[in-house]
Length: 438
Image 1: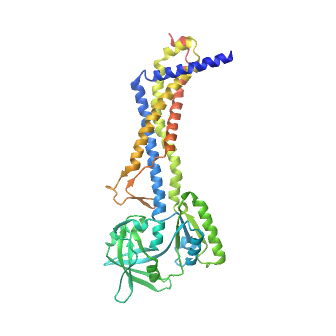
Image 2: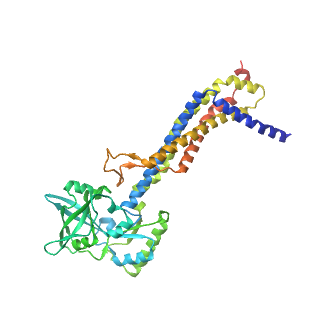
Image 3: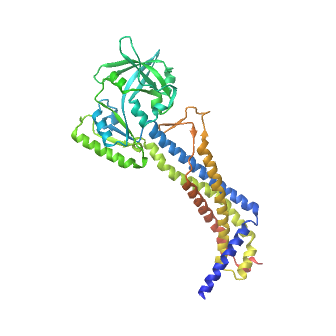
C-alpha cells in the first residue's frame, strides 16, 4: 500500500510541473516584469564581478610586471632608511643564478641626487639597472612616451669622459621641461664621501608607472651609476621574476634558504643587517588587501543587488496567491494536500528564477565579454591613466569573465529568489477552505 502511495505521488509530479509552468504565464506581463527585474540584477552582478576581476588582474599585472617583479631581495638597513652601504655582494648573484636557472634576476642600485637642466633644479631618485636583465624581469623600459630607452654611452666629452644616456619619469620631464636630447646634470654625495657629478643626455621619457618615480625618477645604467657614486661592491635590490606565479611561496622559501647558506659561507657586515626576501604581496600590502577584500565585496554587493531585485518576485507571488485564493480553496476542499499546494507555488517561483537566471547569465556574459575585449576607455578624461595604491593603471579598464562567477551569481540569484517566495507559498498552507470559498 505504501508503494502505491509513493507511485501515485510520483505520477503527480509531471502534472504539477505542467500546471506550475502554465500558471506563471497566466499574467505574462507581470511574469515578464519579474523576470526582467531578476535578470537585470543578475546582469549587474556578473558585470560587477567581471570588472572587479579585471581590475584585480590589472593590479597584479602592474604590481609585478612593470616595476616591482614577483620577489625582491634587500638588506634590512636599506629597507629601514635606504642606507647606501647596505648592499648585496655581486658574487651572490652568480650563486643564485646557478641555483635557480628557471628564474630571471635584475639587480638595481639607488641614490638621491640633485638634478639640474637649464635654469631648473629638482630632487631626483636615481635607479640604476642592467638593461638586458631588466627587460627579462619587468616591462619598465617598454613604457616609453618619447624617445628610445637607451642607457648606453651617448658620446664622449672633450675631456675624454663618457656621457651616458638616462631615462626620466613623466612628471619630472614635464616639471623640468625635459625631452629626448636634453642635457641633465646630476649632483650627489658619492659612497667615498666626495661630490659626484656628471652630465647626462636624456634618451627618453617614460609613461606614468609609479607616482613617486614619475615625479623624481631617473633611470641609468649600472655602469653610469658606479662612475657617479663610486659604489662597486654590490647592489641594493634584486628583483626576481617567476614563470609560474602559483609557485610564489615555495620559490620564495627556497631563495631564502639559499641566501641563508650564502650568508654562512660569506658573512655580511652587521651594519647592513640581514638579507630579507619579500614577495609582491609583502611589498605592496594595499594591493594584496584589495584582492582579499574583492571576494567579500562581490558577495555583499551581489546579495544586495539580487535581494532588491527579488522584491519583484515577492510582489509577483503575493499577487498570484491573492488572486487565486478561491482556486486554492477549491483544491483544498476536493482533497489536495497542503504540501502539494505549497510545492506547486514554490515550483512557480523556481521556474521564474530559472528563466531569469538563463536570460540574465547569457546577457551578462555577452556584455562582460565585450568589456573584456574593448574595456572602458577613460583616455579622454585621464590620458595618463589613474593611480591607486601607488600603481598607475592604463586609462582603459578591462573586465575578465570567470565562468564560476556566472555560476555563483546565478545560484545566488536563484537562492535569494526562492527565499523571497517562501512567504507567499506559506500563505497557501494557512488557507481555510470554508472561509476562502464564501
